[in-house]
Amino acid sequence: MRRFIFCFVVGLASVAVGEDATNVVVSASSQFDAGTQLMREQKYVVAVEYFQRATQAQSVFPEAYNNWGISLVELGRQALAPEQRLQLYEQAAGKFSRSAEQNPTNKLTQLLWCQVLVMIGDMPVDGRVRLGCYQGAIEKCRRAAQIDPADWETLNKWGVILSTKLPDFAVDDNARVQLYKEAAQRFADAAQNARFSSEVGPLYSNWGSALVRAARLAITSEEKTKLLTEAITKFEASARALPNYASTYSNWGNALVERGKLSRLRSDFRDALDRLNTAISLNPKDGTVYYGLARTYAILGNSIMAIQTLRELKRMDLTGALLNDAVQDLDFASLSQDREFLDLISPTGGRGVSFSNPPLRNLPR
Image 1: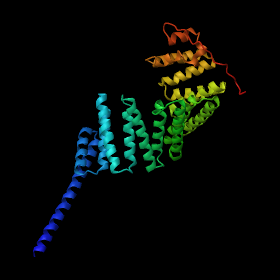
Image 2 (image 1 turned 45 degrees about the horizontal axis):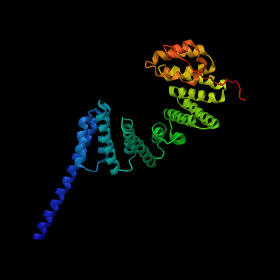
Image 3 (image 1 turned 120 degrees about the vertical axis):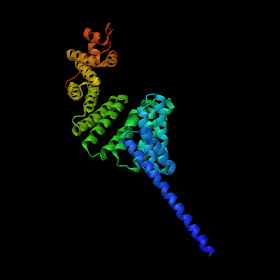
Image 4 (image 1 turned 90 degrees about the vertical axis):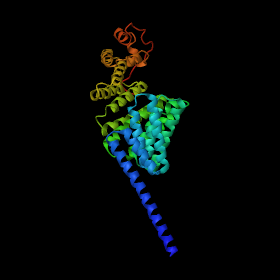
C-alpha cells in the first residue's frame, strides 16, 4: 500500500513537471509572437523587451535571438548619436552570434550577422576593428554559402565586400588585384544561380565593376585591356537583362573610356559617349556621369561639348568636388589653355593642365 502511494505521488510530480515545461514553452511562444507583431508595427523598443522575455522563458530560442537582433539594428538606424548607433549594432551582433550558436545551419542568421558586421565596420571605428568586422562578414558569407551553395544573394554579398571593403587594407596593389579577381569569381558563381532579370542585371554590373577595378591596378597594358574588354562584355550582358539600370551604362561608358585610353581608338570613345548619354537619360541627376561625359568629349578634342557638359555638372555639383578633380585630370589636357575651362574649374583662373595625351586613331594598327 505504501509503495502504491509513493508511485502515485511520483506520478503526480512527473505530470506537474510536464505541465510546467509546457507552460514555459507556451509563455516563450506567446512572448515571441507578441514581439514579432510589434516588429511589424515598427515598435522596436517594446519588441526588444518581448524577445528578451522569450529567451528568458526558453533559453534555446534562435528565432527569438534573430528577431531581437533585427529590432536592435532598426533601433540603431534610428539613433541620432553615432555612439548609441554603434552600441546597438554591437548588441545586435551579439544576438546573431547567440542564435548561430544554437542553430549553426541557419543561413539567415549568418547573413544577418554578416550585414551588421559590415554596418559596424562602416562606422567611425578603429582601423583594426573595421578590418576585423569586414573579415568576419566574409566568414559569415562563407558559412552561408556552405549551407546553401546555390544562393546567389549570398555570393553577391560576398563579392561586394571583397571588392568594396577589403581592398583598402590590402598590403599592395597586387593583393588588391587578387581581391577584385576573387570578387569577380563570386559574382560569376552568383550569376550561374540567378534566375530573373532583376537579379542577373545588377550581378553582371557588379562583376564588370570588379574587373574594371582590377584593370586600373594591373601592371601591363595587355592585362589592363584584357580585363577591361571582359568587363565591357559583363556590362553588355547586364544591359540586356535589365535595360533601364542607369549605373550599368555609366560603368560601361567609363570602361570604354579606359580601354580607349589604351587603344587610342576613336570608336571606343564614341561608344562611350553613347553609353554615358544613355545613363544620363535614365538618371539625369548623377553628376559623376556628366563628369565622365565631359572628359570623353575632352579626349576627343570636342571642347565645345566638353565645356557645355561641365556647365551642366557645375549646376548640380554644389560642393564643387567633381570640378576640383578636373584640375589634375589628364583627360582634360586638351582644355589646358581654354579660358572657359579654367574659369569653370577655378573662378580666379588656374595654371591649367600641363600635360597632353597621345593622338587618337580611327582604326587599330
